[in-house]
Amino acid sequence: MLLEALGSIALGFALAWAAAHRLGDRLPARRVVLAAGPLGALFGAYVTHSALGPGHVVATLIGAVAVGAVLLSLLIRPRGRIRRSAAA
Image (cartoon, rainbow, N blue to C red; front, top):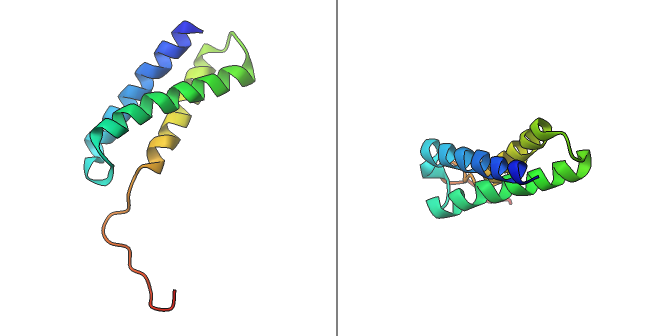
């Protein structure tokens, strides 16, 4: 379980760093992104480990990366201004 947690934190940090590097203009502060990636991956590892049980290390890490990526995708802001119609 400890290796799953450390692996998920490392993968979440790598995912957050890549997102901050590629999408820096569309994400909030770099500190928020670099904290959200590992936390989301750690939560994903916890949920996946709870659902599958021990002995599924690779599946747990895949679940960790998936939840970390979903959390980071929620931080992405739209590209320019949002146009709203007068009727809305």
